[in-house]
Amino acid sequence: MFIFFNKDISEEFINRNKEILHKFDFIDFNFGENKCGIYIVGNISTEDIKENLFGVEKILSINTPYKFVSREFKNEDTIIEIGDFKIGGGHFQKIGGPCSFENEEMFREIALTLKGFGVNIIRGGAFKPRTSPYFFQGIGENALKSMKKITEDLGLKLVSEIVSTEYIDLFNEYADIIQIGTRNMQNYELLKKLGKLKKPILLKRGLSATFEEFLLSAEYIVSNGNPNVILCERGIRTFEKITRNTLDISIVPTVKKFSHLPIIIDPSHASGSYDLVEPLALAGVSAGCDGVMVEVHNKPECALSDGFQSIKFERFEKLSSKIDKIREVLF
Ligand code: PEP
Ligand code: MN
Image (cartoon, rainbow, N blue to C red; front, top):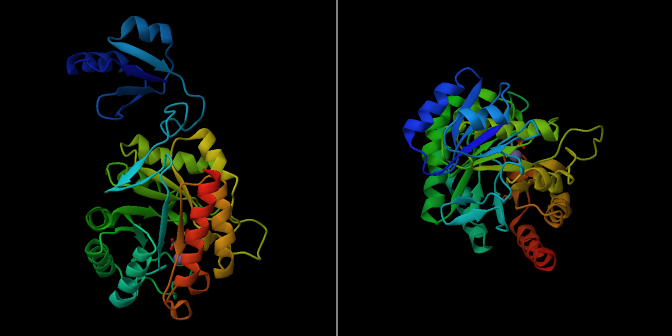
């Protein structure tokens, strides 16, 4: 149950309310600038609340297990600001870049070319969570610093994946959006700590996570104080092996129905194949997603990771103009 207090309620009355509520389990939070709420886990009736607490404006009972990220809690779409760029609530972003940062030259060439196609946000992995310990693991800290410098010089924003809580300060300084990869969707300690930042978080769906588990992971971040979460569908594991994963298109309208958070599609990790990226991306766009994130490489055949699913510049340019056309017709 959520209790909203009058916007002008004093600190003193909030504290007196908290003392009264002390006998119940409650999670205390601040959502937005002046809206103050308390989420009560224990048993208390709305009559008790109205009778005993000061300055109560509204009481909201939310039926889904996820609370802050639900549409019941907040009806308007969340719009996330990444500097001057926005995502959600009708704002769409095409994110592109290599799976991994390999060297400055390749990254600059990719970032510059994508900028020419109207891309504002560049992806690039510095720490790579690979299935095999013998695969390329990423260059690490220096890669992140180089990507930040290159994107900043070009007036672009950077999204990169964090793999451990030990790098939080580093990512807070050098990434504009912190990506939580599929394998870490249920790393709750990481989610809680990223909830303490204000930095936008790109949360990828776990390999076998249900819709509810996905939204509960987002809830960990938002309930800890960071409302800037972008969801990302990147394919789930099913019995089908012909594609790397199975893109769950239905999650896009489902997220729109039950949550106010933006959702983007990653057709690269979903398909595992460069020639399937376009149809999957366009399907996601038609379903109403708020953006796409695509792996793009200047020489995919030489890429140190995920080369086969990376598209070349020419393909990206075509995809980009098809996305614009679909959005023009449908939205
Ligand atoms: C990635 O974006 O490079 C990545 C590792 O993605 P995922 O977590 O979806 O596998
Ligand atoms: Mn990849």
